[in-house]
Image (cartoon, rainbow, N blue to C red; front, side):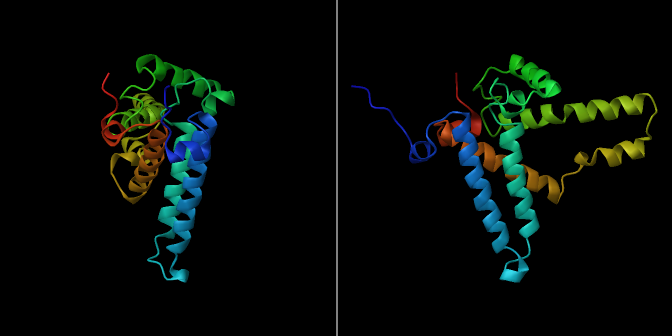
Length: 183
């Protein structure tokens, strides 16, 4: 008789479908918000409450908008009918097979999805520069993404937390979470 391997987290959220990923991410986000509250100076924390609140918001947004399953038809944006979102991420899915290391890993998948998500912004900025709609200084201000700062670290930490727990729920081991599955 086959024994089905299920982690405690998977049993708690009820499997590994889209709803279970959203449920787990919701509770992680609530936990991060709780931690953010404890960091407020009013409660004797070190004053990083807004930073951790940003991590919590990014964690939730990452699961909703650019989760490792974003190429699937049942992703949050695809269900809501955002046509550009559907086309853009379907194109991404055509280049990267589902559950490949370029969609489901921290080292390769997360950076690929972040770059793919930001590509329209870079294309608009490049077009504006080519047609001289904006000066290079205005473009540099528009593309504040060029230099890594505290806000970018907040976004990165939130995205890593979101992806980590998504991959844990998908039953990935630690090396698979970092590097992806070797196929």
